[in-house]
Length: 284
Image 1 (tube, one colour):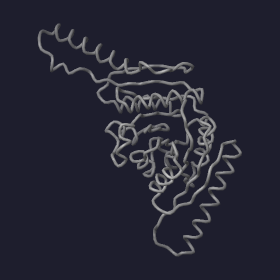
Image 2 (cartoon, helix red, strand yellow; image 1 turned 90 degrees about the horizontal axis):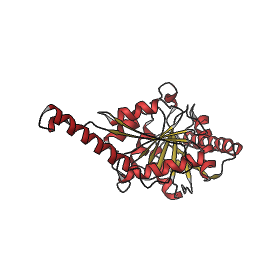
Image 3 (cartoon, rainbow, N blue to C red; image 1 turned 90 degrees about the vertical axis):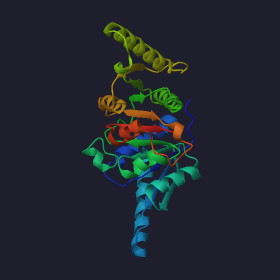
Image 4 (cartoon, rainbow, N blue to C red; image 1 turned 45 degrees about the vertical axis):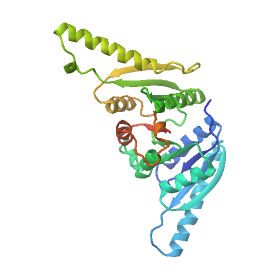
C-alpha cells in the first residue's frame, strides 16, 4: 500500500485552480492523507503596503481553497504564505512538513495548449526530492486511467509500485508501457537470412528481458494491460500513448536521481515533461 503522510499543494490563484483543487481533494481522499496549502509571494521590490496587501489577499485565497477542499471532504493540514521563489518555497515547505507529494497545477495556458507546463512545475519536477504531481485542468478528478512508462531501472520499479498502489486506491485501470529500439542491423554480419535470424533472436531477447522487469510485482486487484512497443524515440511513443488518455495520469519513475536533487531529469523524462498532454507524476 502507498504510505502517504502529507500532500503539499502549491496553490496558484489562476483560472485552472478550481479544477486542480478538485483533483487534489480526490488525491487526498484516495490516499487518506491531509493536504497542506502553500502560496509563494515574490520578493520583488515594491511598497510595503502593496506587499502587505498581497499577503492578505494570498491568505484569503488559501482560505477559499481550504473551504473548497473541506466541502469535498478532503483532510486539511496547515496553510502557509511564504516569501520567495515559488518552487524554492514549495521545496522548503515540503521538507519542513515531511510531505510525500508536491501537487502543482500546470498553469492556465494548459487550457489552450494541453502540453503546457509552467516554469515552477518544471523546476519542481527536476529538483524536488518528493514525488511531483503536475495536474492538467482536463484530467479526471476521480482518476480512471494510469499510464506507467517503464524500463529496467530501479527508478522505473518504484514508478510501477506507486502506479499499482494508486490504481488500487482510485480503482483505476493501469497500462504499463515500455519502448524498445530495434537492434542495429549494421552490427550483424553473414548472409541476409543469417542477419534476419540474428536480428529476430535479438528482438526476442530484448522483449523477454524487458517483460521480465515486471516479475515480482503484486498487481492483484488491478485491471492491467502490458504493452511493449518498438520505436526509435521512447519519448515520442510514450507521449503518443498519453495523448490517447488526456484525462488520465502518466507516471515516470525517476527515483535513481533522488540523491542528487540538483540533477536534471534524463533526456527521455525531460522531453516528456515538456510535451506531456496529460497530468504527470514524477516518482522520486
